[in-house]
Image 1 (spheres, rainbow, N blue to C red):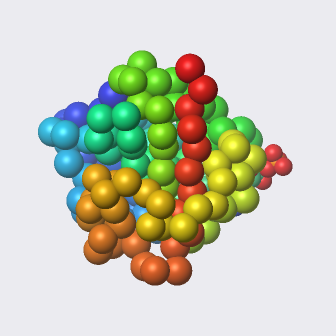
Image 2 (image 1 turned 90 degrees about the horizontal axis):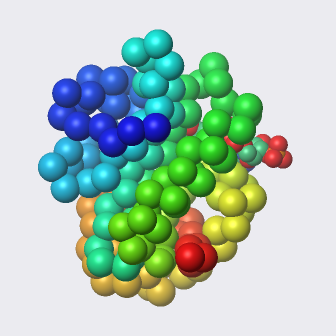
Length: 142
Ligand SMILES: CC(C)(COP(=O)(O)OP(=O)(O)OC[C@H]1O[C@@H](n2cnc3c(N)ncnc32)[C@H](O)[C@@H]1OP(=O)(O)O)[C@@H](O)C(=O)NCCC(=O)NCCS
């Protein structure tokens, strides 16, 4: 897995579109975008928006043909390691479709209002994700 940059934008957009996830609002200059390539093909990715010790985890995507093989689990664990290395203690996310997946990774459902203001002010929270999206939280163990 490596950090992705602007030169990876096409691959990122392609993978997100194939997973029905939004391609806008990813900021290649400020977000931590992590991805796994196989033969020049981006097969898994996730985005971290970091606000001091809090982070929003978003745009978690695995190539359709590779789903249900543990890739998503591996991806999130590596992203959490990366977050820890940047002194993140608390990870928040919104999901409409993958609550069970994140529960298996020890994320718990919380009321949106419990997320810190920095996270609630992100585009994902304030504009893009519908009210029906579930908010989940995990404290990273050092
Ligand atoms: C959600 C996603 C990242 C999971 O990746 P994956 O590689 O298929 O997941 P894994 O194989 O590691 O699955 C781990 C476990 O979670 C379960 N799981 C996977 N996707 C799930 C989902 N959407 N809802 C509930 N459970 C799910 C698996 O069945 C598996 O269960 P098991 O351990 O009992 O076998 C992938 O399906 C995806 O890209 N989905 C589309 C985009 C999306 O919804 N992203 C999340 C919101 S940001």
